[in-house]
Length: 311
Image 1 (cartoon, rainbow, N blue to C red):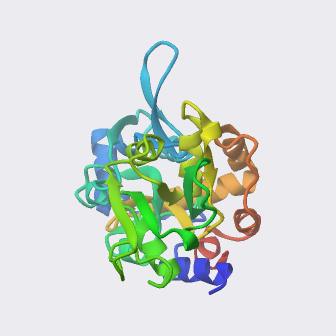
Image 2 (image 1 turned 180 degrees about the horizontal axis):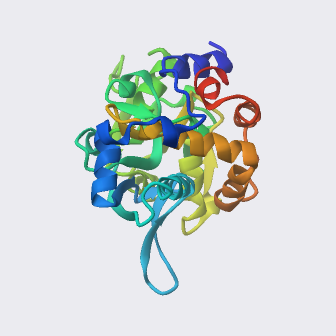
């Protein structure tokens, strides 16, 4: 299936949403998330520890710990919008990971998940997703000492994934069980094993420590881990691009807060402020053609159309 068709299929199943005046048309009293935000004057943002440049925990020069990233900034822009209704709104951060993020949303432990979560059909049955704010591809990284240039030639060694992500299924679907089956060897000479890290940093560290030969994840997350590693010159990306991963901000199925998030994201495309966020968190990185085309279309159409047809 062609790239554009894949992404269109991903987002076409999203519900149609009109966000021209989201803050005004929502019935806040009947919305469980928004009514609680008004009552408690607090919003809880789900954030990630090791998902740079989208969401990560860092230490400032003063030793203070804080969460930051592109997704976090978009959530904070949403907070600024909510403050028009709740001027004294406070922000609380709640750390989640790939295993706990969806359940935390469903259980109301967090109001928005500001991480690097791919919007797909299965997850849509559990949570709402915002307009995609970023498009990534699943890729593989290894050490430069490894002569491998593609997963198609990988038959012996250890692959590492992060628990709770869609990565393994993406790879298995990509190869259709022919070149790489990953979990089940078809003959005794097929020596591929799979291990899992609890988070992206742990998975990446397994590669650096020679406990794994290849780490597969979203390209932007791998790039972020390489850029913050002790020696970023020792890694190389394989040439495989296995899927399109549209990132969205999650919220509860029974809330319309997603309408407000949609409005914030699409407005940032239209007024150019998203470019400032891009330059801040992805300096020197050019948007992929797919990402650039998506932003360009969202600048001239409604959020409703952007969400369902802009791909």
